[in-house]
Length: 445
Ligand SMILES: Cc1ncc(C[n+]2csc(CCOP(=O)(O)OP(=O)(O)O)c2C)c(N)n1
Ligand SMILES: [Mg+2]
Image (tube, rainbow, N blue to C red; front, side):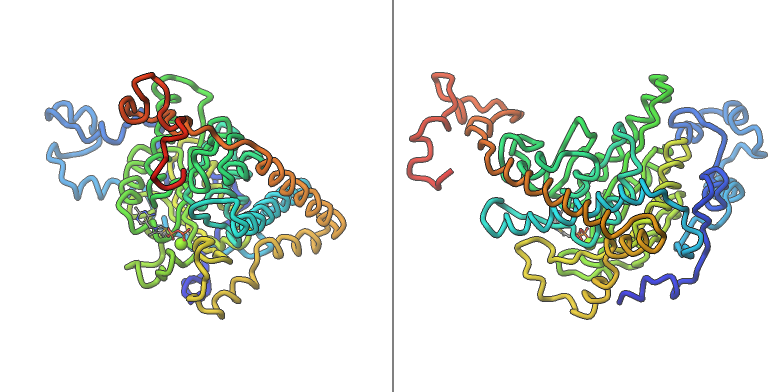
């Protein structure tokens, strides 16, 4: 199954990752002259022949057929919007020692944090579904560590590690998982709804695909601020993370369309871990090569080995630079794997042990560690010191979360749009749920 996605099977187009986006043979041809805000829709609103001639003086006929527009678009672009990424080891952009250690630390934080989550979940410290990210760390780290604080990240229900990579403190994430007031959503979001305004983490989302329009809206905001409100320094980029199963949902296609049409500063990052709960990606999708769907909308589509943080980072650098410079969106498919079941309630007995072993042997953390040591970027001692530091960070987060207070019952009704008078608030103006008799005869709250 794994080989169905391998570079060997689909050929090896070479992508020189060391080049800057405007010099890049893949992305360079997409460059068009700077257009006004929503320029691409405006061009299609023809009200009279003279206006049409004015706008399209280069076209011979005033009758505009779709085929003419297609021909024109084709002549501006080359055919190669597809890219199955095969990056030979020698072409990887070199990283500094500092960068290498930062990547390692972030991945170790993600892994150690999630392992601790599993322990705490089975000890009854967390409620509801908890979806872990073990195995996929190279995607979060490879992308998010390149962002500025003002850039946004939109996640899914598998969101703890995205939050950590974006800088939300481990204490705030763990407390949120414990349902405590010190959590990043004051304990009201829980595992699937991490959010931090300060860090521009625009949410985890329980419904699949729900975050994609939110991310598209965030990217629209950046473009609007820059081009309409004339905030010249607003070059913020949004990353939308979601899974392979989610790519079969309508929102995905709708948002690719809007993002390409308006050249939004967004990168769609598909974390293709080959499974949507117990449904194999290969059984559920007409064309399993998700990256090919980008070019259908006029944006580059790239496949990358999501178990290799350096390769992910190389692709991310180009896609983020492209978004930041106003060239528009990119669809990146990262082939990755989750080492645990879909959620902590899933005993993970259905996936083929051979498949699991295949990906376990490609653990992104082990691979980075080997790279850093072999290239004299770090010693075993230095890496062990990072492991130790992170162990302490995670233990501190658990202690902090455990000692933090639970929210008051009335917090449940805060920020509820409908006025809960009559239901939540009694005639005396006080929250009914604060009355100890409120839950009498019903389930314990
Ligand atoms: C709109 C919607 N439909 C169905 C579900 C149930 N559901 C939860 S997770 C999931 C699979 C998603 O798989 P994928 O996008 O590959 O993400 P992964 O869990 O592999 O990270 C589904 C169908 C949901 N949460 N939301
Ligand atoms: Mg999946």
